[in-house]
Amino acid sequence: MNFKVLIDIARSLLLARFKQTLVAAIGVMFGITMFIGLLSFMSGLNELLDGMVMNRTPHIKLYNEIKPSRLQPVEIAEKNNKQYELIHSIKPNGGRLELHNNSAIMNYLERDPRVIGIAPKITTQVFFTIGSIELANVINGIDVIQESLLFNFSDYIVEGNYKDLNKIPNSIIIGKGAADKMLVKLGDVIQVSTPQGASTPLKIVGFFQSGIQEIDKVQSYVALNTTQKIIGKTESYITDIQLKLLDIDQAPGIAIEYAKLFDVDAEDIQTANSQFETGSSIRTLISYSVGITLLIVAGFGIYNILNMMIYEKMDTIAILKATGFSGSDVKSIFMLVALTIGVLGSLSGLILGFLLSAAIDMIPFNTAALPTIETYPVDYNPLFYIIGFSFGIITTYLAGSLPAQKASKIDPVLIIRGK
Image: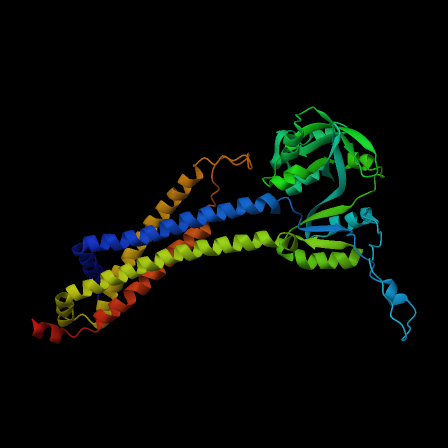
């Protein structure tokens, strides 16, 4: 049968039951709108929460961990079958925190094509002297430029300029939580003491805020050479080497490789932040589940409307078949009806979904924990729109298949005889 004729008949059926057609299309539209809006918001939220930690975490960290000796005294003691050898309170081996031969390691890493960049670091415990009170803190000695380039350090500076760490000798950037506790402001000088008793005055040139209060209370940042002076070490002293990789998914395997190659400890980002990845996966799964459920509910609405349309159009179907239309023609007509509803509803849902996402993106989001965030986070990933449109078409296709199949099997003789 001429396809144009089938289209004209499908259009007539749609217009004859315009209210039911509109309700079905609105169902699909609402499902896709909420699917895109919910997924865009949840994905944006995931990126924000993960970024608070993941962006500040190296893909691989090389360091020396304090741990007991691999070969314990009991293992090298002379064996005697007539007595038991008991050893307790085994202490760590006293190994150095410094990465031995770190210059050669960094030269090797810079030539590795899998590595985007490296940033040396020194981590050390200190005390901030406040009158007669000593406040425990952790100083991170960093290569300021590399730290900002690779790990977005500058994005977390809420007051001051991170470049001042290089420009101003004996300067420090402290966490906002620690600053509020000490009641200090930019330009103040604080006394920093090491566990060994050495004391150094440092000028505050900035405050940083990561969004995690426990970190902001105990973390501070100082230029690499200043940290070496504070702890009385040479310019070659480094405790950590941070790496950023071209492919983050390769981090676990490369970490194992480097640990064996350089005889150091290596921690990959997946291991360091496994709890955040789990939370993101669960939130994304919930978003997809809710969105798909809405589309399935809309599909049942289309199924019911087409089913009712068939019962009400028995006469029309019988006349079509009596005048030469085959069962496949009738099936094609009702499939065209279903797909038309699906396409119109899906396109409308895409447009409204984008507008809903844009509206969420403009809602003010003010919190002291995240001063750099001004509105709710939204992810405008084109994949969400592709999935929403595809699932809308698939849902309406499946919803129209059974009623269309039923219409194609109607016997026109029985219908006309009954009339």
